[in-house]
Image (cartoon, rainbow, N blue to C red; front, side, top):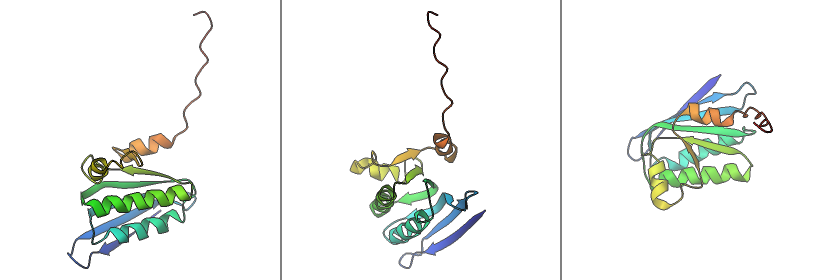
Length: 140
């Protein structure tokens, strides 16, 4: 099951597209963005994601792999959402390239606060429980 919205920027005409995937429990699982995140739509990003987080029970993956530009306002918006998730004891995994918005957060020193992944598959794998380890055989 999936849904989506498109939020238009009133000042520069850029668009930020949003689409999400729901888990079998009806909770948002992956929210994917495409376009630009800047001062013109950063508040829209925060409003969208805090709304989605209200329906989450454990974790949310934010997929920024199709975002081709993010400025400091976009990085700050991501930090605001991350802190909102922490306040609700939710895990937030962020998928993005080294360029956007990870680069901005790295430059400001805030990249340690957010867990980044290179792909949605990597983020999904991080959620899977690890198989129990066999105890080492004594004397071998």
